[in-house]
Length: 300
Image (tube, rainbow, N blue to C red; front, side, top):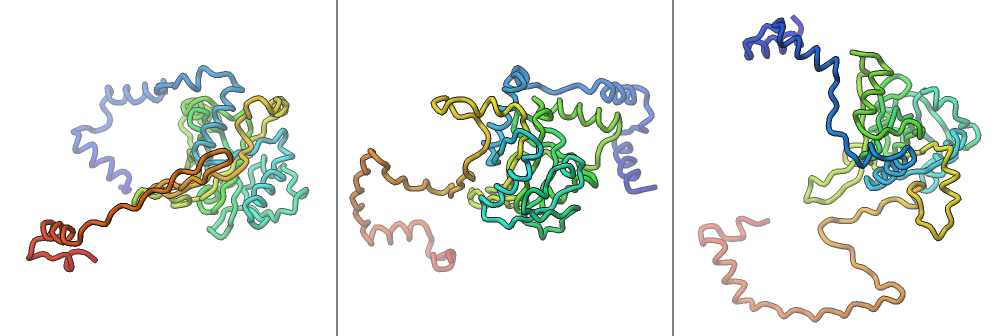
C-alpha cells in the first residue's frame, strides 16, 4: 500500500466509510460533472471586453505590478528591454520555450536570452501567461517544460507576456479554459495565480517587497486595439497601462514627511514640548516594575 493509499484508508476508517457507498459516489460524480461555479462579481461580469481589459490593468497596478501595452507581439522584446533599462538591470534574461515566446524577434534587441528553468542565478525571468483575471488583476500560469515554474518565483524580476484575448472576467472563466485546454480530469501539475510581486508585512507591519519571490512584476500586454486608446487627447483622463514609474513603498510605521510644493504654504514649526520632570518618570517606572523585578533585568 502506497503512502497515499494509507492516508485515504485512515480517513475512510475514521469516517466509517469504505468509499464504495453509492450515495457518496453519486454526490462526487455529480459535483465533478456539473462543476458548480462560485459567486461571480458583477464588477467583472457586467463589463464589455474593453472594460475588462481596463479593469485588469487597474487592478494589476493597484497590486504594485507594472504594465506596458504594445500593439503587436513583435514589440514585446523592445518593451522588455526598456523595463530592464529603466531599472538599471543587465540586458539579460531567461525564458521558457513556449511557442509564443519562441516566435518573438529577440534578435532585434541587445538582450542576452537564455532558455530553460532557472536555479536562482538569473535576475530576470520571462513567462507566457495562460490567462488573466480582470476581477483581481491576477495572472494565471500553468507549469510545463515550455514555462518552468522556477521562472515565476526565483528571479528577482518576473516579466509576463499576456495576450489581450486571454483576459477573462473571473476565476471561474479561467478554470473553464484550463479544463477545455487539458481535458476533463486532466490538469497541469501546477496552476499559479499571481497577483502583484511578492511581499510580506509579517515583521512589525513593515512592507517588504520580494520577501518570498520576485520584488518586481512587469506585464507586457499585447493589445492590437491599444492604438485607439493612445489617440485620446491629453486633456482627457489618462488610460490605465504603461505604468510610468515603479510603485513607491515606504515604512508603515510613520508617514513620510511632505515637502511644501509650489503654492502650498509651509506648515508652521511645532513648539518643543516641555520635558517631563525626572522625578515623575522615576515614580512611573517604580510603579510599572516591582522591586523584585527591576527594569535592568527585564529590558535589554
